[in-house]
Amino acid sequence: MNAIPIMRPWMGDAEAQAVANTIHSGWVAQGPRVSEFEKKFAEYIGVNEAIAVSSCTAGLHLALHVHGIGPGDEVIVPSFSFIATTNSVIYTGASPVFADVDEVTGNLDVPELDRVLGPQTKAVMVVHQAGVPAELNQIRAWCKARDLLLIEDAACAIGSRYESSLIGSDSHLAVFSFHPRKLLTTGEGGMMVTDSSEIATRLRQLREHGMSVSAADRHASGGTTVEAYLETGFNYRMTDMQAAVGLVQLEKIDRIVRRRRELAETYHRLLDDLDAVRAVTDPTCGATNYQSFWVELQDDMVDRGHVMSFMAERGISTRRGIMAAHLESACSQFASKPLPVTEHLTRRTMILPLYHQMTSDDQVHVIQALSDALTEQLWPKS
Ligand SMILES: Cc1ncc(COP(=O)(O)O)c(C=O)c1O
Image (cartoon, rainbow, N blue to C red; front, side, top):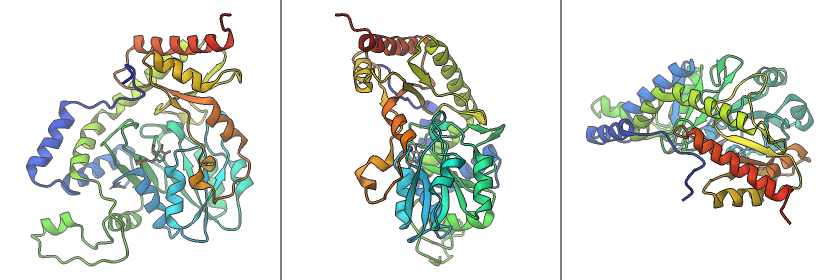
C-alpha cells in the first residue's frame, strides 16, 4: 500500500459508536436513523426534502425514472464523468447523448448543449465534476426555454457553492454520493434533494419496492397496517447503520470542506513554479469543495503513465483524470459527436492525493515527486 493514499475517509470513534448503537437498537435496515439523516441533510442544504438511497447511481436512475424518462428519449450527459452518470440514463431505456465540456472547468456549458440538442432530447444531466460547480443559471435558463428536465449529478459536490448557495439548494433535483472518495461517506450511499414534497413522496415509495407504507412506518404502527404496491419499484434503500455514520459525518462537513480548501491552497502555492502543470481551481461562478484535486499535464512530451509510476515508486498514490464514457466499450452502441476537449482532458489529467488528515510535509513530498517526474522526462540526464 502506498504511504500517501489518494483519499482517506475522516472517520473515528464517534462513527464506530454510532454503528454499534444502531446494532444494539435492533433496527439496522432503513428506519429512524435514515429519517433523521434525511431531516438533517435537508436542513444543511436548505431544501424541503432529502431522500436517502443506496447510492448516487441509484438516485440518478430514480430521478429520471420518476419523471417518466424511458425508451425513445435522449438525455444529454457529459462523457467526461464517472460512468455512473451515463449508466443511470441507460437503466431507463433512454439513450445518453454525449456533450463536450469546458476546457477549464471540465463541466457542461450552453454552447455544447446547443450543439447536441435533438428532437428526442428530454433531459439534461449536469455534473458538478470533481466538486467544481457548473454554470447553473445559464443551463437552467436554457433547459427552461426548451421545457427540458434538469437533473444535477452532485455526486462529488457536497459543500460546493454556486455563487454563494450550496449546490442542491436551488435545484429541481440533485443527487449526492457518500462513496468513500467523497467528502462525507457512509461506505456506500446517496441522497436526493428537492423542494417538491410530491416528488419526494413518490421517490420514497420507488426506492422501497413501490410500497404505500414503509416497513419502518408499518413497524411503528404496531405491525397491523397492510401495505399496497402502487407501482413497480426498486430496492434502493439506505440502511440505518449507514445513516448513523452519515449523521456523525454531517456534523463535521463544514470542517471537512474548509480543510480541503486549505490543502488545495497549499497545493496551488507549491505548484506555482511548475509551468507545465495546470491545477483545478474555483470557477468564476462559485467555489469547489476540491473533492478531487486534478492537474493537467500541459506538455505533450510528458507521459502521464510514467509520471504516475514514478510517483507510485515514491509511495504516492495517484489516479488518472476523470474518464470519458464515450470511449468505453460499454457505451459503444451510442454514437457520439467528436468531443475534443473531453478526449484531451481525459488523456492529460491526473488526480493527486487529498484527504483531511494530510500534512503539509505530505503535500511537499507529492509535489516534489511530481516535479522530479517531469524533470526526468523533460530534461533527462544523458
Ligand atoms: C460524477 C459521479 N456521478 C455518479 C457517481 C456514482 O456515485 P455512487 O458510487 O454513490 O453510485 C460518481 C462516483 O464516483 C461520480 O463521480
